[in-house]
Length: 365
Image 1: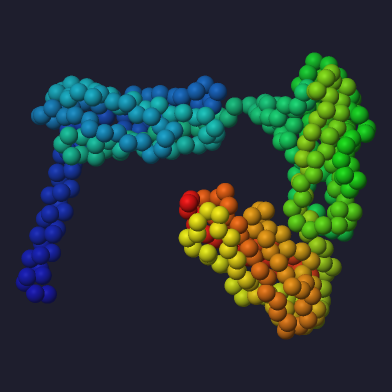
Image 2 (image 1 turned 120 degrees about the horizontal axis):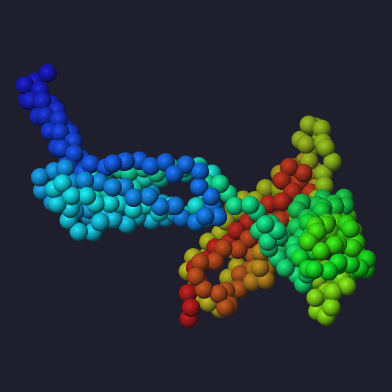
């Protein structure tokens, strides 16, 4: 090792040692009675928990707390603002808000002082969650009953099946509520209630059945239903939505069947129109190809909004054949970054649902 390199390493070591010593001296200028605090178990319903970190200036010169930074917004610090003379005391107050934060917590406060020292204070504890109420679980009030949402989400429904799901309802009124058997809605949806007469402050269930085969569609569907109760006036009618994501059912296939199945391939799935002016109508094309070994049928194309229109010259492709899908975007009434999609449904059993995306940045005239 060269002498110069040895000297450099020695100087670097001395610098590190002196820095550590200085830091140690700086930290000794403030002595905390308790540099960490365990709140133990606190209740969410009791609100913010507070603690004072009391310190003493054990140095020879006055010190001022310049800043205290909490590791999260749930912790609010306050502190002695004026200089603290030698042998005098000051404080750093921490307030931890447990609202919507059940479970254990570990937080820090980073303290910066006028003598360039950095001190880390710590708090921890365990938040006992507030008991959940009916209002928490079923926040939507419709007349005298409570439900979770104004919509019943059926989730995925295959086009060869009927799916039934149960949703909780609650009688928040002081009188019994009777549900009528008749309701308004499409024929592929049916509802029933258990029980049909719901006592005050009691829970029940509404059972929603969705016939995917009878609907005979693909994609995300939204329908409106109306059921009635024995309540007075407008409270008697309850209008809600029913959501369903209808997908095509494909029977289990052998490996040979999979190899011989149709396959939809899309050359490029994203097109960016770049900057356009509001009111411009722009178009692009996406090339769709059947790279499988049997006939491909494009069941449906569905745009994410009415401003985007897909057009296909043909929906049936033999193996090796291609078709261009024209997608037109009308930017009227829109501004800023736009991202729209077109969903393509086909009889490709491996990827029956595929999407293409168009993008643009729309400026006002």
